[in-house]
Structure formats: C-alpha cells, structure tokens
Length: 140
Image: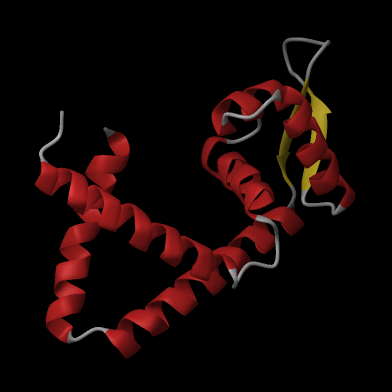
C-alpha cells in the first residue's frame, strides 16, 4: 500500500499530466489514436493489423477500422506478408511519415513555447530532470 504522501503526489501528477495531454491534443490535426498507429509503424516498422492491435492494446476490429481510415488518407500502405500468404503488413507511406513528423513538430513546438513562456531557467532545469523520472515511472 503506497504512503499517503506517494498517493497525494500520484493524484496531483495524474491530474497535471491529464491537463497537459488534453492541451497538447488541441494542436493535433490527426486524431490521437491514428497518430499512435503511425507512431508505432514509425518506431517498429511494418506490422500486421493484429500485431498493431496488440501493440496499441485495442481490439483487432477497432484497429482494422483505424487502418482503413489511414489507408483512405494514403498515410499507410498494405503489402503481402513475406512468409505468410494469408497475412498482410501495413507500413507508413511517405505521406504518413510526413504527416507524423508534422504532428510531432506541432506538439513539440507548442510545448517548447509554453516552457519558455511559463518557466524560469531553474524550473526548466527541474523539468528536464523530471522527464527522466517520468520515463522510469512509465517503464514500471
């Protein structure tokens, strides 16, 4: 059972992260779920729809719908699986890579401007150190 201090920190952190995430989403032109799929394909390369669903922790039917929408926008392409003729792989198209980079740029740009506008140099240094701690928590 966590201490009351750890629980209070956790509650404040969850609230602050939720607000920040919602604010950054306002910069998005592509829905978050679709950006997550594009990001997974960028990081991990071509995957089956089932593998993408498992990676994103969604039902295969939901992923099939997301893949269909991304294909309609020419952000991903489909090709035959090299070893299993029953399967196909989806991968980023050049347009998908460009759209993903633009989304990332908008998010990072907004956040960088907010950091510079709102935080002192000392607070910026503290935030930089905190990013590593958040990474550790995310990996737990």
